[in-house]
Image 1: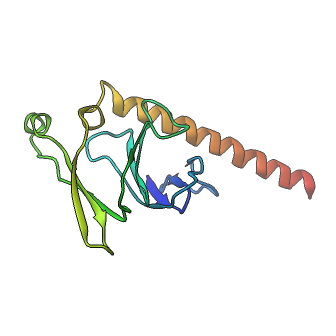
Image 2: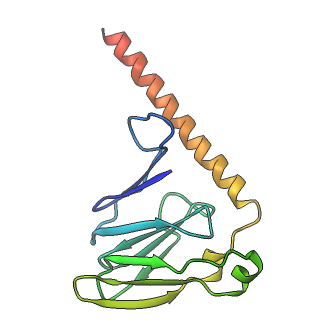
Length: 155
């Protein structure tokens, strides 16, 4: 899966199939520009999108029509990275997950501890999120089939 971040929305693409469109396109965010994004290193259903006014956190296990959480910040956020989680799962559950963010142009850097509900995977989250994306892919396949049928009908 590939995440592309655009000025006012983001898209998710499947890389092993040919689709004319992304399998998911977020609603437009108004009032600030998106600057970057990344998948959570520990939760398969969570995506972080940084903006010029903060961070939107999309938890697809919760909802897919809007961010589940928004963090408003006073400085623009043009850069962020997660601390690599330990390879030992027991140690990973005990250690807080840190995210560094800031603005490369201003030279600012801040640390944020990711909330435990956005860090700890839910029971059967991987299977549930895979099923969600499979349903989204089926929608794309249906739309592609309809477009092909319409092309044939018009010719």
